[in-house]
Length: 213
Image (tube, rainbow, N blue to C red; front, side):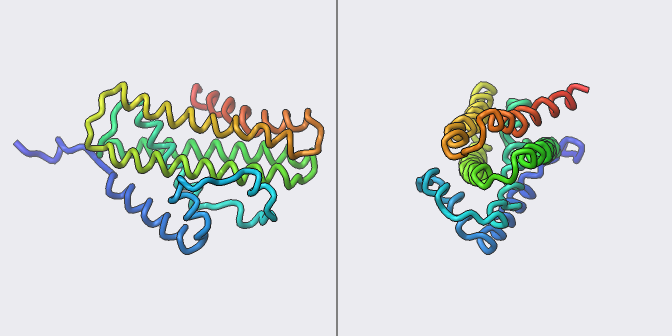
């Protein structure tokens, strides 16, 4: 017998609506960023982007940030639940997206302190901007893949592998830009190492301690 109590709460339609609105805003507010994300197969040269004039006000995109948070939340929930279907798009995705935002805010505070110690360094800001472009491309790819696979009834091992590829890809993006840290910044190497620890390792450690307690 059909009863409402047997229905699982699904926010798949709401998730799609939010993503659509985000891309509409991105298309009109920052067309270049939109094309970079959506046409992810077009190669972005790190060196050429680094040599371009830097506009700090345009380097950060709230739309791209929210989208990356949603995809991170989705991937984390898929990894923990070992399932990917329409019911996966629930409140747990939003909670993991919130944790992502907490991580970013923590990272920004620590990063700002180290940047203040070193003096404002445009080279580091450029690297942060370029790395974000690559992470937006990566998030878009996995957003599309996830939406295509929600009716595929993937086994648990397949969903785990999917999310691990996503997480390893993020780590690979960060490792890739280590050479830019040392090659394009004339400041002392020990400061760069301190910066990396503060912006990458510190927030992860703080959030893991928060989740444990």
